[in-house]
Length: 300
Image (cartoon, rainbow, N blue to C red; front, side, top):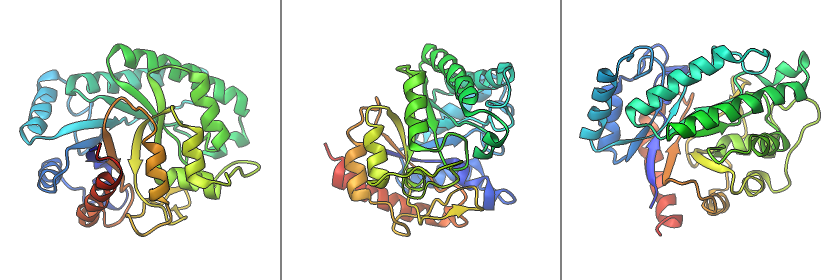
C-alpha cells in the first residue's frame, strides 16, 4: 500500500490567499482524516525557510509533525521570484535553491520540487535551445547538491511553465541525466499536456494515447507523483485545473498501473488540490478516492 499525503499549498494560495487555513489546523485535520503525511508548500503562512531560519525552530516543526504520526513526502520550494531561463547568471537561483535544500535537510524532508519558473511565452523573446541548456546545466548542479544532502530532486512540468511539450519533457530529463533527478508526474498536468497540448508554443504536440502514453514514454524517469483529476480546462488560462476525483477525464484505471511500473525509491502518492476553490471541504472525499485507487492497484 502507498502512503498518502496532500499538498498544503492548496490551503494557502489562490482562493485561500486571503483566508489561509492555519498550519496547526491543516496537520491536525489531515491526521484525523487518516493521511500518512504532508507535502509542504514552503511559503507563508506555513513553515518556510525565511520565517523559520534556525535549526531549533525547524526541529520543533519536525517534532510537531512526528508527534501526530505524520511525515513529509516533499517540499514545493518557493523559487518563483527567481529567473532560471532568461539569464546566464544562475547565482541567485542557486542561492535560493540551496536555502530550501538546507530547509529540507533540517526538517528531514526527502524530496524537493522545482519547475522552469517562467511561462511558455518566454520563447517569444528567447531561443529555446539556449534556454534549455541553461535549465539543464543548472538542474544538473542542483541534482548533485541535493544528492549530497540525501534529497531527491523532482521537476514538475505543466502547461503554465516553459518546456511543456512531451518531447521537451523527455529531452530535458535525458539531458540532465542524473540518478537524483526525475519527473514529478502530476496526472492533471500530464492530461493537459498530452491530450490538449495546452499553452504549447508553436506547433501543438499531443499524443494519440494521451496521458497514459506520456507516462509510458517517461517510464523509469518518474520519481514523484501528484494525483488529481482534470476536466480539460485551464485555471485562469494559465495552468491545469486540478479538479477533484470523479469530476474529470483522467483514465486512472489505465494510468495508475502504468505509473506503478516506476521504481521511485519511495511509496508516496500526493493529492494536489492546487487552486481548487473548495479544497478544504473536498479533502476528505479526495482521500477516499485515492484510498480506493490504493486498495485497487497498490496492495502488494
